[in-house]
Length: 257
Image 1 (tube, one colour):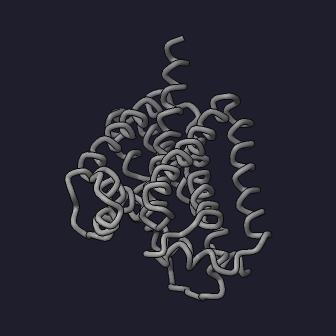
Image 2: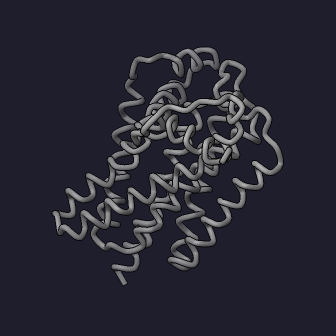
């Protein structure tokens, strides 16, 4: 029951899916991090269902791709996309550390955020177009959502938090070994199920998400000397994009041969 309450709380905070009532209990904060990957399950299943429905309706591929490009961001309440934009602005400013922190907190949208948003949507749309056109391995969309959130949860528990941000540190309080084991178990299960479902293609997509996230979090962790909510959102968006690009490339290779 405590895990269900923690899951309900994290759904309310990290998804844009309407919930029937509000629930908040500070004692359950560790379970919010632990059950964060399960939010990916919900978003991934809805994303998959939307893809199957749009393909079954035989809509133009370009409309299906556009809808599927927007769907995961909309279901997440655009919260991770916001972090991606803020971090892009700060990271690409190439200014001293203190200036970057100021840019990260600035609510205004800068040129680098717009540029990186356009590049993100171009790559994600192109990937979803290829995936929607072939219609293969759509269930891997669930793995993409789950694995990116597993990586994010582990980052909160393992990496140093920026002193300027109490956001990530708040969720890492009172974390025990069982919480970490639960997250790792979900991560391994997602990789294994991806392999069982799509063979080598599933394994490549799963690894692309993990490696893409790891590369992104390494860059921001080194640059900002810790992690914060916006930085985690940035890494999640990059990780999911890498998974989608890998899925599209694999399908492109299959179609070619």
